[in-house]
Structure formats: C-alpha cells, structure tokens
Length: 134
Image 1: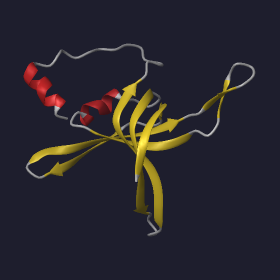
Image 2 (image 1 turned 90 degrees about the horizontal axis):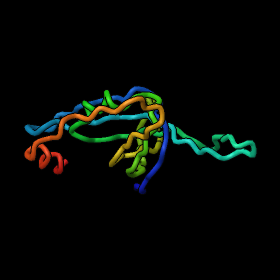
Image 3 (image 1 turned 120 degrees about the vertical axis):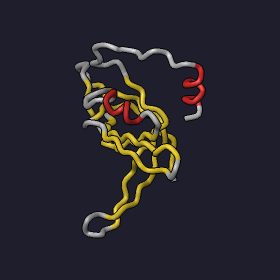
C-alpha cells in the first residue's frame, strides 16, 4: 500500500549512504535521510507554532546517491516528492512493528540557510543520455 507524498521539511541528521550488490550489474545505491516535516500554524502575533509535525525516514535510490551524501546536510530545508509506504519489521525482541517511510522520486534543496551554490561542468551528450535512463 502506498500513496503520493509531497512535503517540505528539515534534514535532522547526516545522510546515510548504502550500496547493495546487484549481480554483474552496477550496485544499487541508497541515500537515507531523516526528515522532520513540520506543520507551521500562524499565531496572532505573526509568529508560527508547529502543530502535528513528524519525523519520517526518506529513501532515495539513485546511481548518484554516494555523491549526494555530501550534498545534503543536517539542518537543510528540502522538498520531498515520492510515495508513502507501509514498512513492516520485527524489533530486537521479535515484536512485529509497523512504520511508514517515504520512497522519494526527488528531493529538492530549498534555499534557506544556503550560502552559495557551485555547479559542476555540463555533462557530454553520452553522459547526459545515460543520466536520462536513471
């Protein structure tokens, strides 16, 4: 069971990168982010109060995940587009547990607290065609 998800939040800890073997093909690469999705509600004095915010694990599978591990940082504001997925597992005491995670299609960096941006050189046509396949 899954449903579309689109939300804005803050990365709460350093991203976690993992690589999984995939037979003779390139390994599958995963970037995990722990994101706090807040719910700011305006107060009469013009400030905001967070009501009903929550933490959610965000998983982003992509061949560039290892590079992105250094790009995404704790405290960064991001916009996540993907789907919410029910995740069933057992804890250390073998109790069945259920949580929800977000399988991201995209994680956009929002400009809050960003001091500068540096772009890499434009990829050649051959590299660009390969990136479109991801």
